[in-house]
Image (cartoon, rainbow, N blue to C red; front, side, top):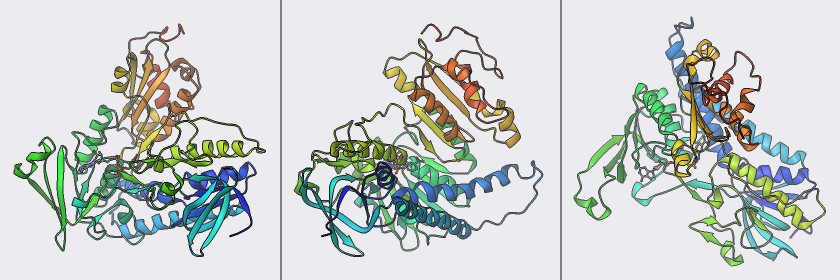
Length: 498
Ligand code: NAI
């Protein structure tokens, strides 16, 4: 074992872990970062980044197809998915290298191997055995577990990674084929993003979803708008489907379903539907990666695979060991993991003492979310249904891209922004957007919400013209009927009494 004692050892180098490692070094800590596969984790290698690189190709194709001639660009198009995959691989590799470079800059020691906590405590330090390129054991005063999640596997779906695939398989650097027919099980975030990409590249995409709606977490009006686009792309969506089995038939796949309304004990006798395709993508959620970390031996509590943390400080049931990101089973988003990394680092270093840090607690009231379908979707805060359930009376502002000058110039006229403001205070309680740059627009609303700004505060902010950011201004002003480019019922005093 090396003599050196690290201040913080981070297990897992995804957007939670690598971010935490850099943040800890910025505060002057001696840091070890342990990763068993690739720096950047799921986000960089099999998730956010590769999908967005492929999405960029599909967006370009759609733009030329739908607007090319109108914009004065006449061309015949030949699609080359393999080339798009090569570009995606290049983007991924450059970013992964960048993460390695940053760790060097901050003098963090990177260990490529599987880390397992094998003993210790917060007073004497913890030992972590690393098995990998070289086997070694290191010692650290504090540990942050950031091991993430992996695609959920259901035995009945017979995921063989050949024809029946996870998102990891379909994003493999060598998967360069456009399936003629692709069946997607699960119309959540991942399913919808891939459906859009592959349908654009020419696949006949069929989706099976258990719930009565795709991406059921989003505002129903937004989902309806997305469905219009899916219809244009001839994506066939079947909701309320209970997928009973998926088989590899040798040169394709076959899935059998029945209605999700059929009670469990009547499934055998229920009417069945079958779906055939060349490949099947299973995207039904993700499982926490908490196995073989030495948790049980140390007494770190878990619940259905999720590492339990005290909700606001992110410390596990063993003092000195923290957990962040997907492995805690919270909001499974890369940016939430990074945010949690900041909090865990400050709490860990404060508990050691001598670092310029202070204790921090988590606050999840404002978490923006994005979905890179075409059009993009972004949302933050409450949906209308949530506000109603919480008894918050809201005024809704709605503004369409069709009515915005810049969006018209860009040919990006699909979609709208919805802004929900508290009827009494004018405070923004949530927003949803589908359309060009939706995730970027939502970032402004998130900032406003985080700092308790009211609709008039945004209304009084000069927004550059002509920009897509004016969608926010008009959407906010429409909550009190005073959007300039929309007829409304003006209420200049709305929310001003507070
Ligand atoms: P998800 O939870 O978003 O969607 C899974 C879908 O599968 C749900 O609609 C669910 O009802 C359905 N489902 C579950 N079991 C099923 C079954 N047996 N048959 C048919 N449908 C079934 O999970 P997803 O899409 O796998 O994404 C995983 C995580 O990754 C999510 O937390 C998501 O937020 C995150 N992610 C975020 C992205 C982003 O921020 N742009 C991109 C991709 C993923």
